[in-house]
Image (tube, rainbow, N blue to C red; front, side):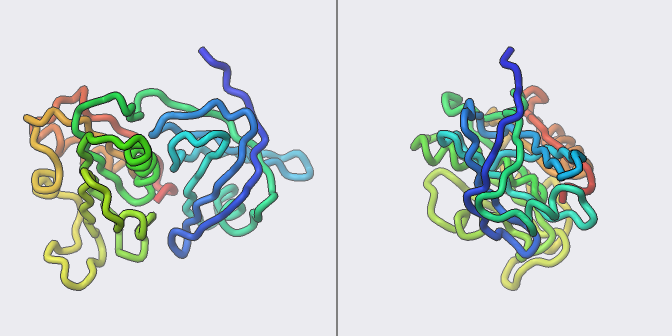
Length: 241
């Protein structure tokens, strides 16, 4: 097993996704590469030696020594406010990874894919979408993206662009935009039945988001007949989104 080590990472760019979320691109010399769906540990060290560490999903497919993280600013957090408000190009921190081998998509897979993201749970799913596009893959993807309101959409412009074989459905839980027939509500069985794949398609299902969202979505997929071994989940605590 490859030993994980801390590597210096230099911020080279930062892009706003929403009012409170930023995508940070780091250059990490010696980066071994990663699979879409994996995450990394980030470590900050203060002048007095105090350290703070958090885990974040990687947003980009492998691209040399580049690692992109999309971070939501968590009020009163130790790490996210620094990443989203303080860091500037040229600043450094440490990154360790990649971590995880179950919640990943490999481009050699031929099964159709269902991606179900809640809030910032879209991040590792976006890495899968980008990896598929970069490889020129023909495996059909369907994305169900559940979020509170349109202002919280990550990667909004990118997901609007034509991407053959990718179908995107937005599900709003608090405020839906005008012209959308589906009322604002939590994820329901009919959402997955209409926007996802039937169980007979034997799709690989990836679900990521807050714990409650992930558990509910997985239960609904099971109720629709999807095989448990095809449902892969990644969850985070209430501060994640």
